[in-house]
Length: 129
Image 1 (cartoon, rainbow, N blue to C red):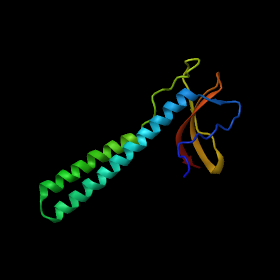
Image 2: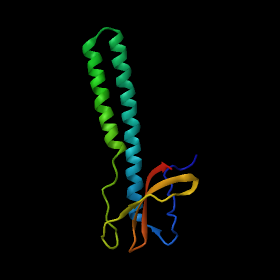
Image 3: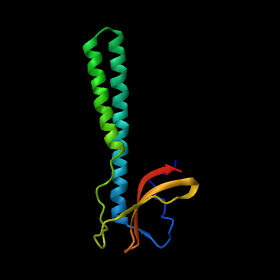
Image 4: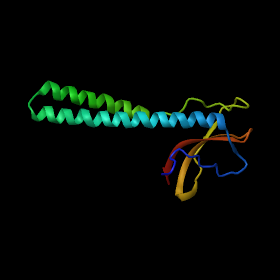
């Protein structure tokens, strides 16, 4: 099975990966993905519980299940849009620039780069162009 947390190199070969920061970004992505899976399972259980209790004509239980579903859904939305807070270069301390260059396969990937130190961090977010 392929490693979904592999680093896609920055298209400009002059840039090098910032290893300590990249390992923190990778751990953040793994932690975030674990929580996304857990909240999705919780949402499925809460929705199923709400439907089951609704068919059983137990309104307060159905309402409680729907409220739990909505709370988990709000948490899921926050998780989807969260990114690591570390935006400073490890060497020079300047703010990293966020860029979305096109990579292989027609995807655009999010990188944070330091143009002065020639370092990059792959953020594990892609977009289809």
